[in-house]
Amino acid sequence: MDSMNRSMEEGHQEGVDRRSPLRILVVTQCFYPDIYAVNDIVEEMVKRGHKVTVLTGLPDYTTSKIPPEYRHGKRRHEHYKGADVYRVQTIARHHGPIWRSLNYLSFVVSGSFRAWTQDFTKTDSGFDVIYVWEVSPVTMAVPAIRLAKRYRKPLFLYCMDIWPECVKAMGITESNPAFPIIHAWSRLIYNACDHIAVSSKPFFTYLEKMNRVPLSRMSYLPQYADDALLRSDFTKQPDGHADFLFIGNIGKAQKLDCLIRAMSVFREKKDDSSSEANKVTLHIVGGGSDEERIRELTQRLGLTDRIRFYGPKPAAEAAQYYKKADVCVLTLDGSTQIGDTLPGKLQTYMAAGKPVIAAANGATKEVIEESRCGICTPAGDDRALGEALLDAAEAILKTEMTRSAQGGPSRDDFSGKTKEGQRGDDLSGTIGDRRGAADFAAYGQNARFYFRAHFTKERHFSELERLLYRMVGETPAKRHCQRDFT
Image (cartoon, rainbow, N blue to C red):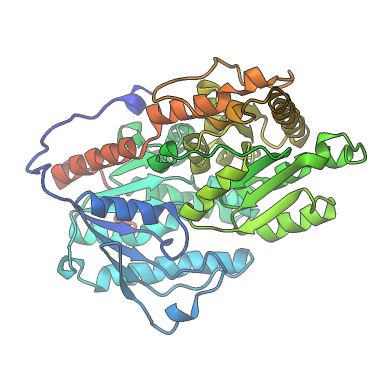
C-alpha cells in the first residue's frame, strides 16, 4: 500500500517543458448547462493557461429531457469559458433503468463514432493528454479509450464512482446475470487507462481487488471545494430556530430516506409546545433520480412542515443557503461499497465552516473523525442519526437562548469563524453523549482548519497538473495500456 501515498517525482519530464501549456481533451458524458463539478474543472484549467477541448453528450440531468435548444442537431459545437466543446447525440435519460441504460449506451456509441471520424488534431487546440471525468457510468470512458488508441495519447481517468459496485444501487446485484458482464467490461475499461486518480482512499482496495488495477497506476486526488467559501462569513443570524442543510445530488447512493426518517424524531415530539420539534427545519437543495421518491416519503411521514425542498441550484447560488444553516448533513448508502466514498459535498461543508452530522461509513467517517468537524453515525441508522440531530438542535437552541439572555453574540459557537490556521477544541466526534455548546463550538472551526490542509482548490489542481505533465512526458512504451478490446 506504500504506492498509494508515494509522491511522484517533481521537475522537468522527458521532453516536456512544464512552463508550456497542456492541450487537454476532456471526455465526459456530463457537462454544462447541467450542474457538475467538471464545469469548474474545465474553466479552471483554461484559467491556468491550458488549452481545453471537451467531448460530451447532450444536457438532460436537471429535467431528464434534452432541452429544445439542443435537439435536432443544434448546438453541437460550442465554446464554454474558453474551452472548445463538441457534443454527440445521446438519448435522454427520462426515468427508469431501461431509459438510463439507453442513455449510457448512446454516449458510448455516438462518442466512439465521433472518436473515429473527427480529426481532433485539427480542432482549435489538438491535444496532448485525455482526461476522463468519471462519475457513473464508467462506460463514458469508452470513447476516450478509442481516442487514446487512435492517437497514441496518454489517458487519465478521475474516478469518483466505482464500477461495477455502482450498478447495485440500480438493483443489479451479483446474482443478476448482467452483473458479471458489467464487471468484465468495467475491468477492461479501468485497465485501459494509463493512470487513475481516485477521489476516496477505499477505492484503491476496490479497484485493485475487483478490477485488478495495479496500485502503481493509481493515486489519491480528493475532490475540492471553492476556496472562496473560506473567505465568506456564513454565520447564521439568531432567529430562535435550528436549521439543518443538505446540498447535493439526490440519488439512491445518497440514501436520503435515512435522513428523512431521522427527522421523524421531531415529529414524535411535536405535541410538546416547548419541544425543539417546533423550532427545527431541514433544507434540501439539489435534485436527482431519487428526488421524487424522497418528496413522497416526506409527505407520507407527515414531515412537510419540517422539510423544505428547493431543487437544484448553481454553486454560487447554492452557497447562499449556508447562511440559513446551523449544521450541514449528509447520508450515504452503507449496503454496498459505494458508501465508502468521500462525497464532494463534505469538502464544501467544511470550507463553509459548518459542523457536519452524517450517517456514513468508509472515507466520510474517517475524515469526520480525523478532522473532528462533527458527528458520524453508522450508515443507514436513521434512529442514531435522529438522536444526533436532536442533540444538535438542543445545543443550538440552548446556546442561542443563553447568549441572548446575556446580551452577547448567539451564533459564534457554530459559525466556524477562526483565524487562518487556527483549530478549535479537540473533539472525539462520537455519538451517544449529549454535547453542550462549549463542545459543539469547535466543529466548524475544525472543519475549515482541516479543509485548508487537505482540500483546497490549489492543492487539487497543482497535483492534477503534475500528474498530467508526468504522463505527457512518458513515451508510449512506458505506459501500460490494454486498449485492444475496443
